[in-house]
Image (tube, rainbow, N blue to C red; front, side, top):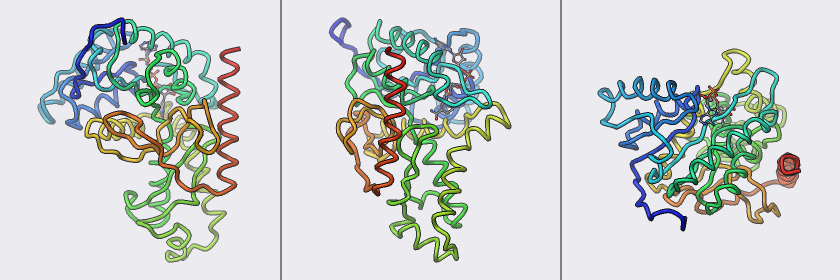
Length: 321
Ligand SMILES: NC(=O)c1ccc[n+]([C@@H]2O[C@H](COP(=O)([O-])OP(=O)(O)OC[C@H]3O[C@@H](n4cnc5c(N)ncnc54)[C@H](O)[C@@H]3O)[C@@H](O)[C@H]2O)c1
């Protein structure tokens, strides 16, 4: 950031851009987390940002002290994490990729505003289609790839863990499994490496009396993939699950945890994939995306991953055509 004064990063400061369903619930989850002592809310609708800041700040006496206010892009230059949730959400029967044209424009304008004043922190993209918008944010900002990440399939992985946990009657935190690839219709449930506390998934299923592995896992993967559609059909938008996923990513960054989370990142050759942003298990710490954790994938899973990458690559080519 040669055009800007050298600003010292404030680890305890976070910004949320876009204060709709996802932005406001994320801000609410972060207020309760105790991870930050200052939070700036920005929205194209200034009243909305001010209203959410006031409302959420009234929760702090029941949580921890925190300064929460509607601010401007000048206020966020030293924020450690800038969460972007600005943009249209899916309507019933709309896929995430259908949002690409309107939300690419919004993402470009938001990133340009951020970079006008400079930014020392990590950009955490949540708006959909998150893989495409993370790619755009990375290219437009010119920031190093470790500092531009998408929430990716962290939410989908949470959904998978919760479905598997219910099926198997175990704590979802003891389930180790990832959804990888696009955060969307071509996502892959990487069952090949899934386990419960180190015990391979199929063995745990058999212990629980389930033997039709392929059919059961197909059904669980479909439920996970379609859960956003189901929620949107029933209540118009999804926001609680994603707000907890974003909180978890922030926690891994602020506490420098080196946690392995399936965020959306620029790939540089893993499984032969380059110049594409999608979700793979990634080590998350104070530096953002600090490295890949290449979980073993079956041949079928590798093929599905390449297919997912090809779909995203085509969308990117179209928006740049
Ligand atoms: N990554 C995920 O897992 C995940 C999960 C759920 C939703 N989402 C996505 O998050 C995004 C937000 O969803 P939502 O339900 O909160 O939508 P929403 O319509 O409730 O909120 C969007 C907000 O963005 C604001 N906005 C629009 N343009 C802006 C700009 N240029 N600058 C600042 N603010 C701007 C709007 O004023 C609005 O308040 C959508 O793209 C949705 O698909 C992602």
